[in-house]
Length: 148
Image (cartoon, rainbow, N blue to C red; front, side, top):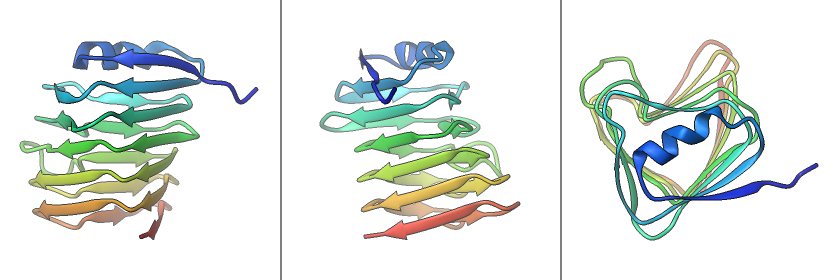
């Protein structure tokens, strides 16, 4: 069954609450700033995150998004950070599958996107800039495919 349940999210707390749901979700994020604070959003199940307008995920520590599940799509989302923990990319794909479309990843003291432990990242029409280290980091059997 390829059907997804649609959820409209307006806060970081609501976005974090979707982590426990095991069914396929299409998550629509209202325009605005989502301050994730010290936590991260773990995507271990099929998800499609779509930001409407200017949707910004701000991160203080760790990854803003950590993908470990299959069939995760992140679209039209602006990710800023993390700014405190060396070695933590803004978006981590660890053993999962991530497709990023029309996203922006910037202003981070480390890497932008990490593909590790067999994680597969497909980046389409994204902008990765103002990063202290590499835009895309691939290690430990991870892979990345980038297209304009």
